[in-house]
Length: 452
View 1 (tube, helix red, strand yellow):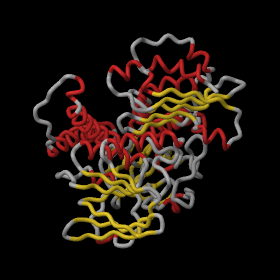
View 2: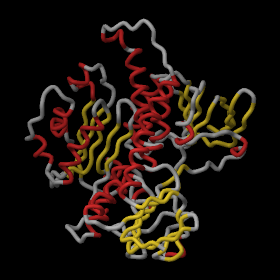
View 3: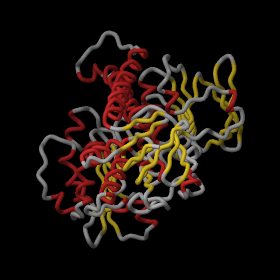
View 4: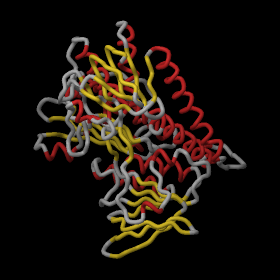
């Protein structure tokens, strides 16, 4: 058996964070991947979906050309070219990542299983390591719906493999994946109907953001069915039919394709973790401490599989936490990071910290300030005035507790507020900051004038 200083099982974005430093220190490294190199982000998540969203935005802007005095005689979408672009970008990213791993590490392609806490087996080849990093990510949850096995249902991975545009896309799940795909395919010409079990979409946000997002998407022609309970699905000659209960009545809706965006499961079940003595919770998430160590201190788990974050940027941060602990440098901890994320509908919704609802639950003495995007000159110039900005601050300390920017440029602007929060700056420091005009960001300090 070959022995390594470090074995990395899974090649998501934390691997790209960890590996350069290990190689710089001349350590021997094995990398293992059961599927496509790069993890969810490169293959089925950020890279392809945001490429798709970009094409959808181009189509949308083309339809609005006359508002800007630009007349485009023919407005049509070539779906095959859209997907060709999506696949070209993700495939090049994957192949480049794999070539790097094959050059710089001993790369094993196959499913890894623990034999004991130091030994990993890949297709009957066994290797050992002083340190093992588990970075196997997560996958879509199979819906528990009668009739599902007879229906060609899609998850985010399957949707990206389509070669023909759906005539009518049914989406079960009113959260981030459902919203992003729903708007993108609507803009590319599909009819879209979204079913949500709760009383509002994106339920983790404050209600005003849910209401605003629904209004924006409805204006683009998306149909929402809220408070629905999916009873069954069936596949017939005319497509897919969903039976659902709403307000005590059984209703039906039909479409050509159906996407289920109803949660994800950690890829921990195939690892034979019991043999290594690695503990998981009842959902299969690997238990880790603040330094990403599992119940076996020389085995770490980073990324989605540990349940401490479900984003590329949290996986990358896990990698940084691992490096700090592994090399005994300045301490970094999972608990030090402030939650931040974005939903890439158009306009994007970006958030950092806690919501007003969470501040209420915690019993905090807080103030909130808000501003509609219609008050932002840059947004008016671009004719993109949908959305709002909101900040939450602690009343006595002026500490920023959270913020959301739902509007043009929000996905970039949120980083400025995240930096202020990470540096523990009072909001008054943002008010003192000079920001270029004309931008959306220049209005952020002025929101704090509206605190109440």
